[in-house]
Length: 455
Image 1 (spheres, rainbow, N blue to C red):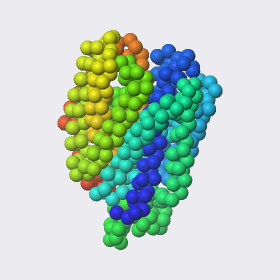
Image 2: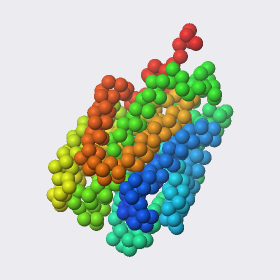
Image 3: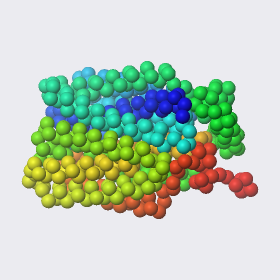
Image 4: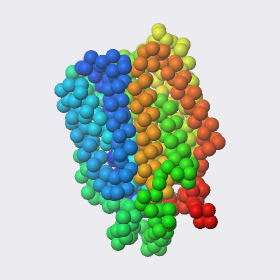
């Protein structure tokens, strides 16, 4: 691999780091936000979900501009939204202003979930695509860990009334670094050639490929795909030909959030405190959850191109069922009389849960969605997958506080357990394997190519 491939993938994946930081940072602020803005459980759930509503808008809006204006330009827009969202949330003087800036940051997260994987997939050789696109997920979980660690250090260093503001504000630092590093990487050759900039696209290919023969082959494959009749820029998205990949993207994205992952990430300290841990211990335990997330993600990314996407999902699905069943049992057994022992058991369950997620869904989702759609609709396909992901993230995160308050943690984890039975069945019966398949050959692999005789 050329150094430019690695550098470009790393820079794009930094959007994932800020994505992960933004996702987890609010977990350390929920108690302060309730007090600062006088929120009940439903109000807290809506406040947390505000950023997720932004991610829905961002995921919905990102695909078409990414196809029209380019992947790199959209990454610049994303970085700017991260900076504005971080500083605005930190400096907000009332609840409405806070939610507006969290919404703007959420738009950046939703766009990042679309554009960063597309960019990385389109500059990566097929043999390394899983690992390079997986860098986005690696940086998401690194961002989550850094958010948990930052929250803990800020909490023990500053007074409660200002700590939550610093927790949000520090996110502006990696966002500015991301914007500066974007100046050093190229636009993707697939996008350049798709808008008629063949000369520029070939030049980027030469810089990305290790040999002239590899460059020529990649250029021929891209041209052949773009020249196909069905590759017209106004090709319809929701058609019978695309039905199978649309359903695949919607399914993996929905199951990702029906596991409860974002609800647990957002409320990890609150769950651990409810289970019997002290507030400072709960924050420190959250760091352990973030560290396990990182370790399991690293393990998955080292084998994703050898082990395959489907087999990782199978292992992760089984891990989900074990951990969620255990967490539900602990909650049912101890509620409402939690002890330090119960908090330790919940921590163990959360560690197994996060390991299962990171090794399965976490490592696979963005790689899988970025691979399965044809080039002509990849932007819109990635947008649909991200939109589905964030809609379900908003629903689960909004509902989690009132469900726990009304029914208890046992029922909340039981709901997620039942949903993961559905995911296991889907992986066994429906999900295809996509490892090592060039993007230009994916249509044939998934049966999407038109038969000219039937056109």
